[in-house]
Image 1: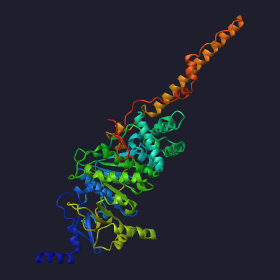
Image 2: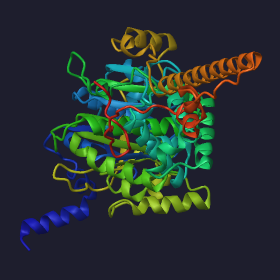
Image 3: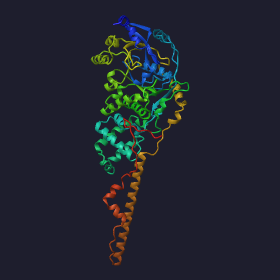
Image 4: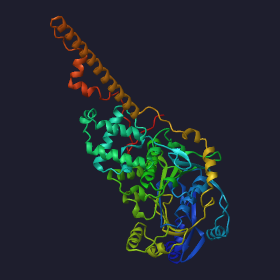
Length: 537
């Protein structure tokens, strides 16, 4: 061993903090997270960072309630925007809207800035505010039922595997027959038709649909509608490319999805977030590794997405996360513990910011041990460290510029420079109405689709049947009159052949055909991993 190697090894032993900090000394652009914590002290000259080029390798922000996860999102989102990277944030509690307004100076901010060697300046960032279907403040975000797809729809309807397959069959039938599924009444109309006497024959050749399964789907749709879901499906459909915009000054636009009005519908908004991600995956081209990502997507309350999910859904999430990296999109899951995220997804999250965990119960202790096992070998006692971190402190490990994990680093995080809290409701409303996107998406449009087509064809079939029946009745009465006239003259009238109307109405086939829905040449809509479809341009 050379003298220089011996010296380096000796330095590692005497200065472990220096060795950890050296793992974060990147040469390219990077986001500043904070200063290293070692042996109870904050070391402002030992900075912890994330390479900008590694943000599309995905990440996890975890920690118990109240430990500072939301502020960490805000801190990362600010710096991404400053570097020209658009950001998407889900605002579950309504406290992220402040990112568009300058922060408020104060003693605590000054103290934190001194601790971590931060040059803090109050700064607001360019943003847009969205809402699901216009419920609550924000530009309405809608999806058509077709674009949402059967796999995601099965998730929000809480269908089992068999019911999910049947729903896929319904979507397939609607596609091939040109019955556009725009809103929930379209889907309901198709399901009801396919289990009717007239519609059963339509699906015999491709598997059929049991009345029991159709009943389950219809009841689930009814429950879904009572939760207010009707507002989320329709047109104009939101174009997810709106999330990729930059402001005139070159900073990335921060898109904030306001969810407080629907926070009591967790299955809905978590699955809707997955639709946004899947739609982005569909539309974006392959770009490989970039110097900076095209978008970073923060998926808050991630445990809600995976709770009760089917195997097919989990496989789709895993594959989407794996492949969307090459589209230049980074995804950060935000939740309480890493065990909330399936192992196959967790394995793809290269950047980790772990806030404090609690160990008040046996389940908490078990979760703590499981979390420690997900980290690389560390110079810290992580079980002790993770229960002793303060608010705004976290254990960090990220991917270095060459893709290798950095040493585990306890970190005191920087303070966000934007407002740490919501902006005033009036200011939020004003920002929404002033957006150029408001006129594009605000007013819903209800054009002809499956419901209208089925209703019209049913009405036409019924009218045709009534007209034929009336003609048959008139013909019958005419012949009866002729017969009566023949009796009156003493001559028997020859028996007339059945009229064409009688022949048609009297046939068993007519009773089925008169009420069946005419089919039309359709198109097969290409679907993504989630069964979503590309929107019509």
